[in-house]
Image (cartoon, rainbow, N blue to C red; front, side, top):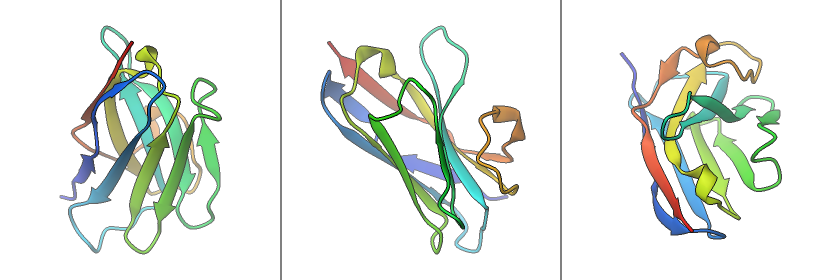
Length: 124
């Protein structure tokens, strides 16, 4: 069973930047879409961004549009999230997800594989 492994979380001051990455545990794993979700303290898991690794189409939540950039490496089936202008409300556990379908959808239930999550904390 393939696992998604996130890295890059940490503590940063408001206004700062942080990068996350996510790669599958099996090199042979292939998905069409990879995404990032997050779950803040006392909140439900929410969509952040998604990318179609084959065509490059992206989708962003309004709350991160213009501040976060998702990118991917189709050869490695790896996804990255560059976060800038971070705010305290961006504090959350960030989860990587992958789906075999081709649309960069926002609904978490339509993703087939998940990572364990990485903590991002933004201090004010």
